[in-house]
Amino acid sequence: MSAAAILLATTGLLAGAGLVESIGHRKRLSQIATRIHVNGTRGKSSVARLIAAGMRAGEIRTCCKTTGTLPRMILPDGTEYPVFRPARANIIEQLRIVEATVDANAEALVLECMALVPHLQWLCENRIVRATHGVITNAREDHLDVMGPSERDVARALAGMIPVGAKLFTAERDHLDIFQEVCDDRGTQLIPVTEEDVARITPLDLVNFPYVEHAENVALALRVCDDLGVERGAALTGMWNAKPDPGAMTAHEMDFFGRRINFVNGFAANDPESTERIWNMALERYSDVERRIAVFNCRADRPDRSHQLGRIVADWAPADYYVLIGNGTYIFGKAATEAGLDPLKIVFAENRRTEEIFEIIIDLSGRSSLAMGMANIGGVGLDVVRYFANRSTQTVFK
Image (cartoon, rainbow, N blue to C red; front, side, top):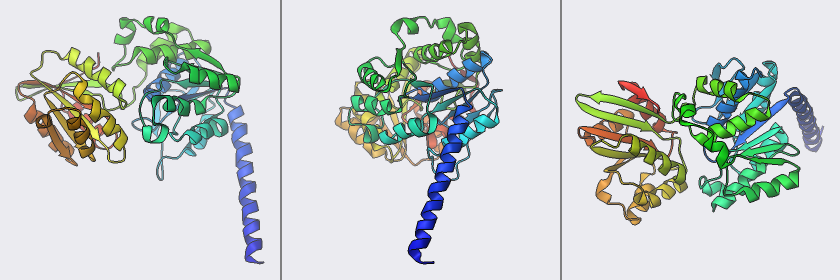
C-alpha cells in the first residue's frame, strides 16, 4: 500500500473515530437533564459551588466541576476529588466530566467554563456543554491579553458561551446590552440579577457562610436554584454547609511571640475592581492595626495583570509596605512607581520560598498588622495561605 493510501486510510479512521465519539458524547449529554455552564471574570468557582450546593439541598442529584484554585469534581453526596491532568489544562477534560456525571446517575451538572480564548469559549458551549442554563457572574478588566483590550471586549468574549435556546443568568450590570444582543441572536432568555435581588441578601444570610462570600454571588446562585424549583431557605442552607473553594477569602489571626498578625487571603481576586474592594473590606475589619502590608503575588506569565494592578494601587487606601512575591515582580514595581507609589515602600521578594516570605511579613509587622495577599493564587500564593493557616491561633471569615 502506498504512503498516500495509508495516509488516507488513517485519516478516515480518525475521522470515523471522532464521529463515533461525538455521537457518544451527545448521547451522554441527553442523559443529563440540567446542564449549567458558569463563566465570568470573578467568582466562577464560588458561584458554581453555590448553585450545586443549593441544588443538592433541593434533592436534585448534582455533580459539579470547578477549575478555580484547584480543579475539583464534586459528586452528588458532596464529596470531592481532584481532577487528574496528565499535562496542562485542556477543555477536552470536560468530556470526561460529562461521562463521570452520567456514571454517577446525576440529574444535573454544574460546570465552570475553562476557556479564555474567545473562540474556545464558544467551542466549549456549542460542542461540549450545550447548556440548559448559562451563567455569567460579571465582566471585568482581566486577562486583557487574551480577551481585551477593553472591558467591553471581555464582555463580548464571555458572551461566546451563551447557550442557544436556553436561559442566561448574570449579575453583570454594565454590559447587559452585549449579552442581550447575543441572547436575541441565539433565542435565549436573559435573566439579570437586579440590585433588589442583591439587597434581599441580608447580613444574617452572609454571616452563616464559613468564609467571606459576596452578596452578588449568593443572589445569582439563588436565582438559578429558584428557576429549578429549589426553595430559597433550602438552597441557602445547602450553600452555608457546602465546602468553599480553596481560594475563598479567609482571615487567619495569629499571635507570634507577642505580635498580632492578621493574614487575609485575597489572592483569588484578580481584577483591579474586585481586589480594591476586598482590600477596603480588610482595612475596615482590621482598622486598629499598627501596620498594613499589601502582598502581591506576581506571575511572569500574567504580565498584563501585574501592570494593571501596579498602575492603580497608588490610588487605593495606602499600605505601609507593598511586598512583591512570585516572579516578574519588576512589572508591578515599575508600573506602581511610575503611577506615584513611594518606591521605599516596595519590598521585592522575587522567587523567595514560602518560609522566607513569612519571615519578611513578620519583620514588617510591628506590634500588630494586617497582611493581605492579592493578585494570583497560583504559584506561591496558595502555599503562603497554607503557611499562615497552619500557624494561626484562629481562622475567621466574617
